[in-house]
Structures are given as C-alpha cells and as structure tokens.
Image (cartoon, rainbow, N blue to C red):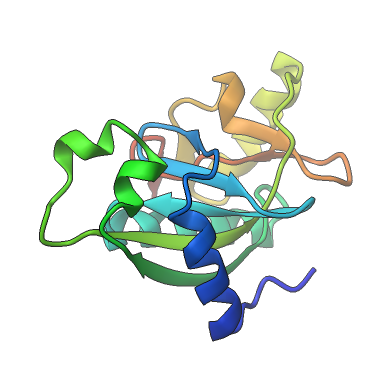
Length: 160
C-alpha cells in the first residue's frame, strides 16, 4: 500500500473532505475511510495532528498501530463544520482549516480484554502510555487480523 500522496491526489480529497461525506468523529479527530485499507484523520490544529501522527508512526514501526502517510492541510470555509458538528462551537472563523494525515484503516471490532491489555503493555514498552485503550473505539484490526491501537491523540497518550 502506497500512503505517499501526490499534490493532485490531495486536491481530489480536499473536495471529498468538504462535500459532506460521512465521518466517524471522536473527541479530537474525525476519520474518513476513503478506500478499503486506508483513510484520512482530520484535526482542528497542526499541533494535535502532528502529535498523533508521530505517536502513530512510532507505534506502526513496532506493528502496534496502523501505518501513516502524508500530512497536509485543507483550507475551506465549511470544512470544519462538515467534519465534526461540535467543532463549529469552537471554530476560529479566521482560520477555516483542518490538518490531515493519511492512515491505514483498521476495522473496529471488540477484542478480548487480555488482547487489549497485551497491546497496552507492548505500547508501554516503546514509551506510549495509553489512558483509554479499553474503550472499544480505540483499538481495531488491520486487514491482516492484527490488533492495533488507533487513538494517538494527546488526550489518550503520553510520550516519554
């Protein structure tokens, strides 16, 4: 899977991102699946995006998180409102941008408590300390069946 995107591919997905597509929304991020094995994660600011991106990339190197691709910014007046309705309440009107990265998609399914604890221990060993991994929507399965963490925002993890 090639997660490196060309400028023309990024522009095409800027249009998709502002079209009212269906997103899965969490507290700090929205996710849009745009292929069978990949998708886009959207954040309100560059610092949140970059923190999650580097945490996820670190986990992916150890096969504990999905692989990541390019990072980019989408600037569109309605983009934030379409991604996550509650962002409208805290949107900075003079900066109608969202910050995005490409990610390998994971299938959200329940896993045994022991498997989640084993994943949490493995993340701890590489310096990623999770706060809410046991929540069902924070782990998923890659298409090869590997259980991985999918929530890397600063609310959920800490780095040492």
